[in-house]
Image (cartoon, rainbow, N blue to C red; front, top):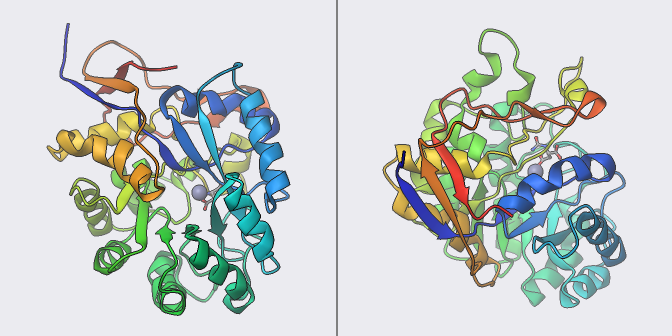
Length: 351
Ligand code: NCD
Ligand code: ZN
């Protein structure tokens, strides 16, 4: 039986959590099988702050893959109030840092050492603006007074816009956008601003978190929003606007940490991220733009060539059951299940 097929350049993941230790070993293969490169988030404990830490972490990622595996981890630096512009510049110039990640302190998982005052990081931002180094922003205010569903929109107004006015040449990626406010803000920017979009925010709205009870595996940050926001994300993802590209934000946590009194934020989608995005583009009758979103736009933003090898997706063939979990015992991790069918499979190009 043959179904519909689509062949595209191998995609990249422009926002990925690979963790460390046993968890890294359990999960890295799922991303490395599909994606050529990934921007690797630095929110380990302790975080990746200086080039030496990033080099050591990159070596651990490579060591968790078979020898000679072509997957390329692109490392990032975790911004703190005391980040040193010289360290950041050295890491960028040596090709070890591809970007700096800004977590407002307290905004999400392992952000405790993040930025508490924007004024503190002005020297680093000035340096990054000068050398053309991208700043990746977790765009949510951590202010507990602000409604959790409004934190992205409030961040844009209170923090992002003033920062971009102060550093007009700074290249910024607003990570994992979840609202129509973010979509419109990025679209209206004259230059220097892009955004990543996750598979899950294209597929679920906030109802998924409360369907018949509390669903901890649907909880991530920024939290999924209303349906109108999801529709705006889908529309812009399939629009062909190259400022919007895939960042899976695949963020595994052991089940026991998610199904807990205070369950942590993060959705693990590495095993089906590309299939989910293909499903969305198919539903939106935009499969001809899938390659742009997953394989070209992000590379263009980061000044890299698209991957030269290819991957083939096929619809409605085979009987591969959706994977419910990976790992065992203490490391069991639930895989993202959108609750709607995923008809697309990867037919060839896995490695
Ligand atoms: C991420 C994590 O678990 O590291 N969690 C999440 O909900 N997305 C952190 C992040 O990207 O916010
Ligand atoms: Zn993330």
